Length: 337
View 1 (cartoon, rainbow, N blue to C red):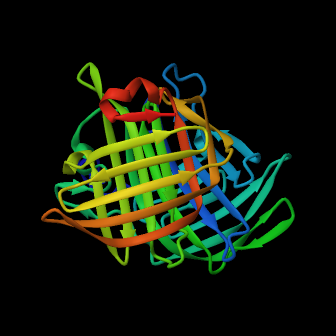
View 2: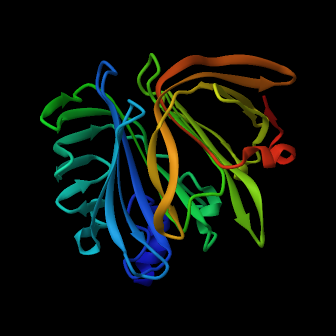
């Protein structure tokens, strides 16, 4: 058990917790779109272990890009099974891994069945002193929430039957990430898109309030995957957010390192409601859109000059903006319209 506890830090895809914990959650996020971008959806399997231990359970959440449809399927904790060997989990007969999901949900309100295979997954690189998206923060114990990117972008084969309608996802693109810990941050911004004109390009943005030593700081993990290379803009690499602008129509974010600058502008639409963890218990609420649009520019900086490396627009953007961003005006240089 001790060896597994040490080893799992370098394997963010596997189950990081224990079913005996209290005040703990863990959730995997699978986003997928068909070849033509007409059917975009997400499945979120996970485990919820409340502090009191009165109603621990497993779950699968489903949402689509309509901004309306979402559903939370709740299961007994005994129906949550994990395997380190294939980084897989089973939730009540449905299977999830970084390379394959098999869904078998037969609920009075909704039926979802089918199999999706994922080819050429591209996870955030895991290194000895930087095991994934969290960097060296992955070694810090008892953080409120940890984050992992299991695949920035991959090709999908297979399909799903949604309430009697079959959707063929073959030729489409997918994305996988996960979170684990006690609670979602008090405030956070999350952006994700991997539907640019050229497949293999993907953006993930996470900005949040991070409790630390009795206070808190504004932490961020931003990864831009392009042509097999990861451009990292993170708190632990010394990157700086220079601008965040948010109103009821768009989000603008500029961040830079000594070598690159990333400019992101998201035009967003209404989202569906998801349940989120509060001390392990899935009682929080947030709105997530899968139909936003992201315009992105990446610049190379060198001796006072800059060169445009990439410019493009990502469709089917996942977007969450939750919490009191205005209270962080000085620390994040927020400009609120």
